[in-house]
Structure formats: structure tokens, C-alpha cells
Image (tube, rainbow, N blue to C red; front, side, top):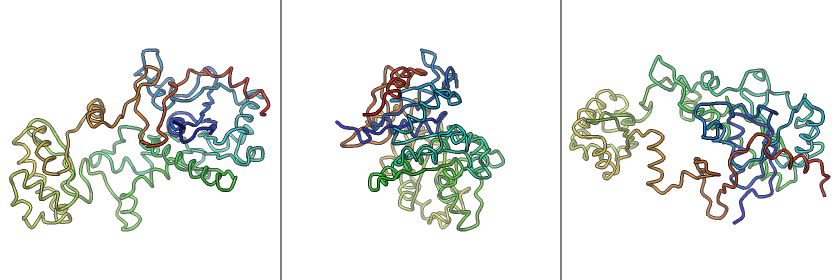
Length: 378
């Protein structure tokens, strides 16, 4: 079965997470991704461990680099830079996340390369754009801090980062989305273009309701722990043995919750009849629900409330999350070259993702790629 992006050549000059995640998503769908790395060192994440796989490779690197070929080039070396230019000249897509101006100084910038390849889609990923913020390093933790995410995460007075490099992941998704949109335009017109995405603007878009609260109503959101600023009950509660989450997003679900808990009168309490009133009286509501939920173990409540149509669940660790996905038949795990990995998240009925190669060894495809790039195109 043909993959959706078969025939596309991606020259991937990115490293760490946002760019490699975007290019892996493209590679899963059939694109030929050539990962350009520093000789002798490679992508920074090759050394980001522990944990390490049995062969000594950092699991961080393994998470975002399958289905790619590796080519080690010293871009400051004239001969290697010439090979890089030839790769870009042949590519459909270029992805890079150097500090702004770096690719231009190397003679590999968009304006320089589009003269030789006018149809190229050239995606630049930055931390804070190519203007006054060009010199700021694009690290996820920094973006979470200055971009507002830490201010709405964790408990009040204790700003907390998300447990994963979430801004990098969101930025990688935006990069892949932008690349595909630009390719659609190229298919229609033959014209390539530059696609620019930054960690900061990706985060501000990803803050969704928090951004809207500020921009529309002038409300500056604050951290509320596991509570939601606009919905109640929508947080963590205490069962007899361990916590569970209840996410009653509307009045009907709240009524069902109260009935299932054997406290139908709670739904008729004037303080709790509407979502707005429940938010206003959140403390009293949480106390009442915790008193009821403390009578039984979490597993029993999850079964009872799920049967009643109330969104709820236990707080799983990552192992439990993969076990749940397996139980639900979601196919969230694949094995690639003997390495267990998270599967591509999108299912396609006609052009499914494919997994043909584990993450490459540094310069593992260098000889073949150099030979190909040295030969004139027919």
C-alpha cells in the first residue's frame, strides 16, 4: 500500500526535539528523510541519557528519529557544505532549527537556495523568531517559563513545568502542518515558500482558552493545580485508596455524577445547579464530593461512574497508559528494528504509517548518500 508522502525528499538539518519530531511524522508517512548531523557527535539527544537502550543509544534520540537516514557533514567544510547544498537542491522540504542567520552564513539559507530550487518548502524553527529574539536560545524549559505555561501549571505560588517538553512537541506539530500546507500550495502553483514557526508563538496558540481569557476579557490566568478555571467538577478527587479524576463538563454529566454517588439532592442545591455556580462554590462542592468518594476504592468508582456516563478515570503512570491503549485496541505501540516505540498517532484508512527502519546510527547512510549526491541527476 502506497504511503501518502512517498517520493518526497526531506533534508533535515534540525536536532533535539521540535524539528526531529516533525520530520519523523513525515517519515512515518513515506517521506525520505535525510538527517544531517555533526561528524563524531551527531544530534545532541544521542547523549541525553539515562535511560539508554541496550545498545547504548539514548532513548530520547530513539523517540523521534526512526525511518530516517543519517549523513554526517561538517557544514563549515567547503566540500561537505557543497554536498549540503546539493542535498537542498534536490529536496522537496528543508527543515532547520539553527539560530537565525546560521544557515545564511553557511550559504544554505532560503533566499540563497531557492534560486537553485524554486519549489523548495523551507521550514525554519526558532525559539523566538528571527527579529529581536533571534539570539535567544530555543530551549523548551525557557519557552515554558517566559511563554506563560509555567504560570498556569502546578500549584499557586509554585510555577511548574509540564512533565514533557510540550512546547517542542506542539511546535513540531505546527511545523509538520505548515510544511504540508506549503506542499499543497506548491502542488497547485509550483511555487515553494519559507515556513517559519517559533516556540513562543506555538505556545501562545496552544494556551487556547488561557490566551483567549487574557486577550478577550483581560483576565491573566493563574496556576490552579489540578482545577479548571471555567469548569467544575473537573479535577482530582480522593477515593478510599487513591486519587481519581472526574471531568463533568456539563450539567447533565453533573446530575449523573450525583445520582451515581447516591446524592441526587446535591444536584438540586442552588449552589451547584449550573456550571457557573459550581465554579463559584467550588470549595464546598469538592468537599461534598470527596466525602462521598472516600467511601469506596477508586477502581469501583471508575466502574460505577463510567457506567453512568460520567467522564472519569484513574491517574495512570506511563506504563498504565500504554496498557490502557492496548486494552482499547488503539495500536499505540510498534516495534521497529527490535525497539519498542510509540506509534504514529494518526490512522489512515488508505495510506497508513509505515515503520521500515529504526533510528539510524550516526552517518550510518553516509557512504551511499555521498555517492548519490556526487552523481549528476538524470
